[in-house]
Length: 166
Image 1 (tube, rainbow, N blue to C red):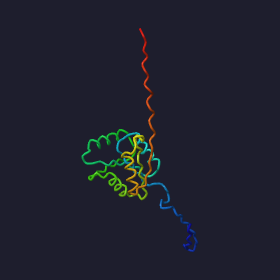
Image 2 (cartoon, rainbow, N blue to C red):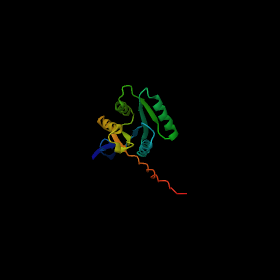
Image 3 (cartoon, rainbow, N blue to C red):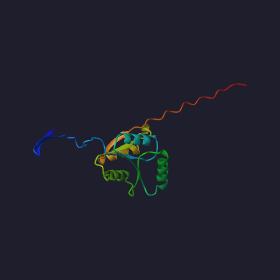
Image 4 (spheres, one colour):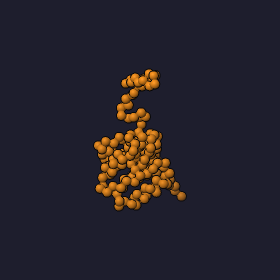
């Protein structure tokens, strides 16, 4: 805690300055970036969590120039879902997904940006692209928040049909 005494037009004022640990006065992120691969329950849950965190929620889809059909399908699903957040499409020429995403995050005008990564669809299948993305973004120095989507209820077990003799 620092105190500064200053004379302003004959009146003494005391001003207190707080150290905020580099997070700013508000403490939360000014923007939350959500990488989107496909529109599924995990992506919708991550976007809802991003809106709840405050600041600007931005969805980002990193694509290669040859993946036009995948990109168009994602944009159509995005429009059908009615999500209230902008979708940015970043083209990656060199097949470096993480570098393209980290460059996008660094180029934002906000100073405090969090990257909220949707949870892997099936955590039982082991290490996948989701885990690689999380580790690589952490290595690039991005602040990460990982959100787990709620698992859908399993379907009821199939019953054997009742067999009756006629």
